[in-house]
Image 1 (cartoon, helix red, strand yellow):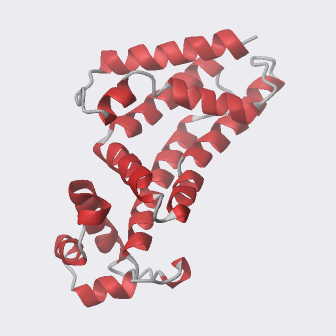
Image 2 (cartoon, rainbow, N blue to C red; image 1 turned 45 degrees about the vertical axis):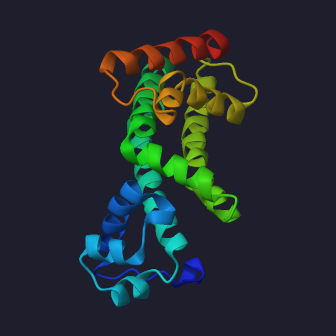
Length: 205
């Protein structure tokens, strides 16, 4: 299974294949996700699967890209340029943290970290379609808030990354290390509210 991304076909069973692959990657990880398992979960033949994705790595990246794009677009939908920073950051923070703590968010993070050594472009693609998208959405909002003199930021990209990392505090590391898997809304609010307060203390006017 070795083919460039340009060879990915999008036909009537594309969504079916991607959803089946998503289920198996979540359950088995990248290495354990065999073509047989993915085809069975998708309800298609191996020949059909290969016709859509000649490379399992391409299939995994397509699954990750679809999920990351969905998350980025969801975040974009709730970021109105005329809303105040505390409201925008709180909403965006909850959206991001929900993704970080989801089964898929945890699985895709672990798989990308584990496989990037063998597939260097895997990390780049995930970055482009995940963190970089979130950064771009936040930076665009920051420009509007700065114009209204609600924020004062010199390095917009750094500030966006700082906010994302603040939203990962405590809960995300505990999840990755298996110390805790269930989180209450109060747990999430504690982290997001703290992230917003710290961010505004540094960059708010």
